[in-house]
Amino acid sequence: MADRYSFSLTTFSPSGKLVQIEYALNAVAQGVTSIGIKATNGVVIATEKKTGSALVDDTTVEKVVMICSNIGVVYSGMGPDARVLVDRARKAAQEYKRIYNVEPPTSVLVKEVASIMQEFTQSGGVRPFGVSLLMAGFDEAGPALYQIDPSGSFFAWKATAIGKNMINAKTFLEKRFTSSMEIEDAVHTAILTLKEGFEGAMTDSSLEIGIATMETTINSHGVPTKTGTFRRLRPAEIKDYLANIA
Amino acid sequence: MSIMQYNGGCLVGMKGKNCVAIASDRRFGVQALGLSTNFQRMFSVSNRLYYGLAGLGTDVQTLSEKFRMSVNMYKLKEERDIAPTTFASLVSSTLYERRFGPYFSEPVIVGLEKDDTPFICATDLIGCINFAKDFVVTGTSSEQLYGMCEALWEPDLEPEDLFETISQAMLNAVDRDALSGWGAVVHVITPTQVITRTLKGRMD
Image (cartoon, rainbow over all chains, first blue to last red; front, side):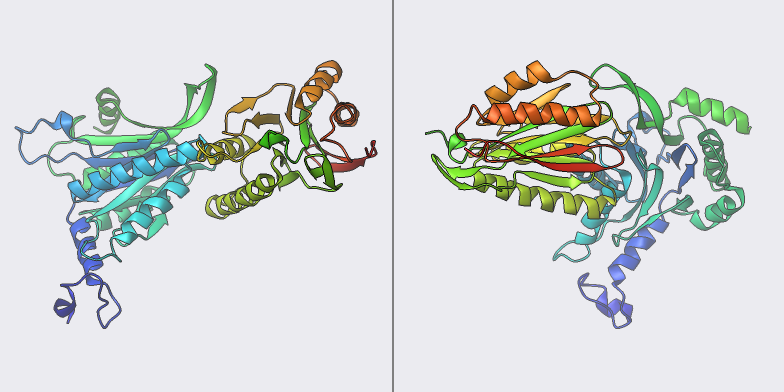
């Protein structure tokens, strides 16, 4: 029944589904696992950097990316689709900044990106994005973690996993997550969660981790102020965390 | 005949100790002909953020409606009140959108930030923001207001004293300008309340 309606994205199937979105979610479920955990003082997102061969120059591969200074994102699914969304998200964030001269709050950017993804479920001649995004940010409302699906729906999470190993990972997180966790514990837990389904050796170059926290930066007047900041962990920092796990 | 002097009117904003004040005159006219003694030039964004628009009357009204819409959309989308600095940037970008066919209006913005710090600023008709430490003025009697404010203002005035200062600055400045006056209104904004007073001035 589903096959008769799968040639046209913009057609509902009799059961009320848009099968292309279902298939897009399948593409995500085949992707490398990504984890996100919200702590009391920050958010961590992490994924495995899986390259096809040892000959690939993995220093050029970036799966955990910054969108604007206080928001970062990781994906599971089709890399090229994620790249396009990252570009659109970065542009949306800068357009917000042009009007309000401040970074967008995480919830606002999430809604914007989700709207873009929804457009591709209701337009002619296009297909949905084959990625789910985990967007992590720190703004005036505090730390925030959101998942955005190919359909355009978004969910706020305390901790979650997407991709290949998401069911096991979420079960693991349900047991390990506590709402009093701080960012260091959260990074530690994220690495442990990824370890469960990790293919290959866990090293500082096969793990990508990003954190959104309150950090002291110099503002435009030269005054040190505390602002929400997203950054990727350096290999040396990841190595330290891995040492604590071994 | 300058378009900014077609309708007349002026505004002044001042910083005090944990409070801010904004005052405007009430005259609306067409060059020498006075038409209204209760023209609204000041608008509230929230009970902690007020702004005023001087210049061409039609642009005052259109801009106030535009800002009302932008702020309403902001509030619905972000589920929070807009901060004074953010609102100032919104005003600036809205005005600059019309860089080569501008709105003939120069705003004054006053308010209290989230931590109750006083905030005042003004922009020119194309959105250049002036973040002032003491007072901001705009309108046909801006020169007179500059003189009065410079003479009367001092830092850390309490709300009652700030009211007296801003009122005297306004009343005496507009008396030296043919196109301003015909009444005045003052809002004093503190963390707990907003006090609005109408001043009795020369009606000529």
